Figure 1 (cartoon, rainbow, N blue to C red):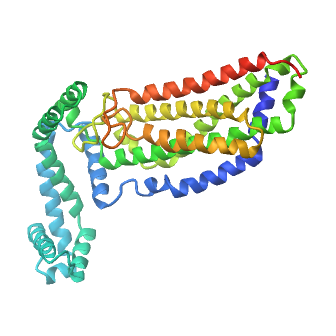
Figure 2 (spheres, rainbow, N blue to C red; figure 1 turned 135 degrees about the vertical axis):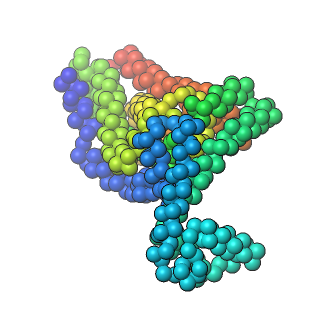
Figure 3 (cartoon, rainbow, N blue to C red; figure 1 turned 180 degrees about the vertical axis):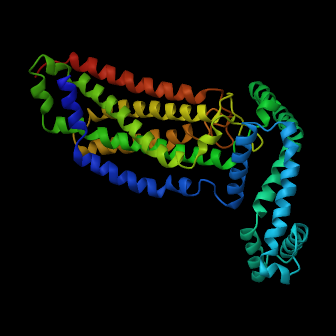
Length: 402
């Protein structure tokens, strides 16, 4: 245990930790921070999030047909509220806009005229529209109407999707799963678009950062030992002959700890946006976002994503320490670490966290990947990292003392 503690101290050096902390702050500001600041990107997404939150609290994770009927009354109430709100805007009275119907007709006429004139906007009209958008519940009304339309046409839409998949000759497993997703208990979920999209992009950025931070933390240690000829001195003792095993164990433990810390740090601002109010909602639903292979709730899906990132981190840790022991200088290690980060982090990590366990192609226009491919890929990668580390330890044990 003392050897393990000593190796952990060698990995967790203040200088490298300071560099990771600084780089992590810059990386967060450049990439994932956007998906927190714009978790609901735009007033329409904010209206959808607000309505979905209210409906989940009142009706549960799905919207049943009898509950859908209550939206007609909610829409009428919102339109009545709009009529009161628009009357309080001075500019609308001058334009003769006194209620929802007159404003909606005025807006449609203006947009059609602008389209006919080649997209030429009238700034006075645009200002008037923005005043109404910002001073009323316009987006709430439009989102209720959109949800009602999606709900009422969902059966026909799902039938068309299934028919198109059959016509395109897609795998039978996908068609059967699409038929399952068309069932009412799966098709009427209330998970908003903005939550799904922010989860996907934020998860991709988190996976890339976990890989980068682990590569930065682990790559200098074995190189430093080699430059200082530490291992030659360690091999003179019986316990020192197995030091590489201890070093690799320390590296894997460090990677696990760093990943848990990264997950916790990234979870704080993400959970502050209150996505867990939809934790019981399925991944399909009214605002459909891909076709999930499994009947997971959103809360379960978040746990699966965290598990994928943990497995990816352990895999890259094994590959990093394996490569670093064969590097005779920091430059040589850098030349190995950079391609490793690009391949496992920027490419594979982003791909793995891009709507995992949903219908998707291997690449744009490429073949469809089978169910559970992401789990197989990450398992193979993690196994490869661990096997390489074990082989390196066995090889060292057979080397002759020089």
